[in-house]
Length: 364
Image 1 (tube, helix red, strand yellow):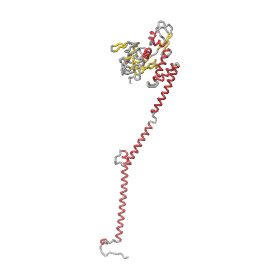
Image 2 (cartoon, rainbow, N blue to C red):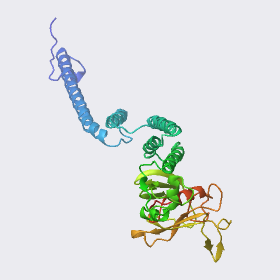
Image 3 (cartoon, rainbow, N blue to C red):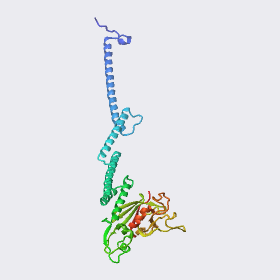
Image 4 (cartoon, rainbow, N blue to C red):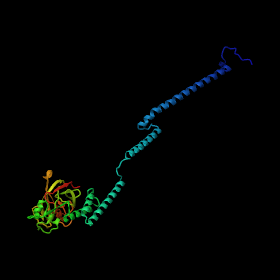
């Protein structure tokens, strides 16, 4: 077919006629435009993805350190919780490792130790009691000394052990066979009990008790057991105990009842500077004879005087009471360091003047 040619000078487009050549040129243009558009879209996509990852790399580490706010992505909160839980777990592990070698007893361990200690104390007390019943007083006393030294007055067996110790010590003392408190003596011409008592810093009644004597008569050549001890007393006020030592060794423990006349802050070193049997009690211009209800100091009186830095301390004393049995234990009861009358008499006979008395602590 012959190609149609224009015999005019204008383009067919001017007349709305599309030629084959012009159609090809248009299609080629569309292709170029589409290719260009694709290149632009790809570039934009690459740029957007790169920008997104750059932003994440800048924000995420900061978000892990700082407190999250409302704009922080949910993933960041989850990471925060995970890190927090990890830190808590790590801290717990460190704490466990730090205390792995801790020997502090738990409450269960303390109960077990207490049960074991009580069991051991019971065993020692039973051994001492058996020795006492067999009249092995030296052995009984030795066991009880070892038992009592580490004990507290609040311990269940303390009072029972203290009572048994006192009985064993006094049995030995009265028998004259206590090597810790007695020495042998042969009566010479001109001796009297009072002179011997002065020479050995003891009392007539103590010599009589050690030898089972009911009177003061002596005969030349008579063998005597002379109580020869350096006695000392410690009054422990929080525990209300008067502890008697013979030559530095535990001898007997008494219950003591501080009266209202004892200074609340009284402590320090004192000594017995005077003793009196059946004393008269004078107070507020009134005089109360021995063995009368108003005589609150009872049948024995041992006045104390401070020594050393305590020499100017207010006067005080160890004495009995006007009650039978246990003294009035109420805080307002009158008197000084009160003992039961039987204990006051016994202590009076054991300790001479100049016996050191240490008062320790103040009331709880």
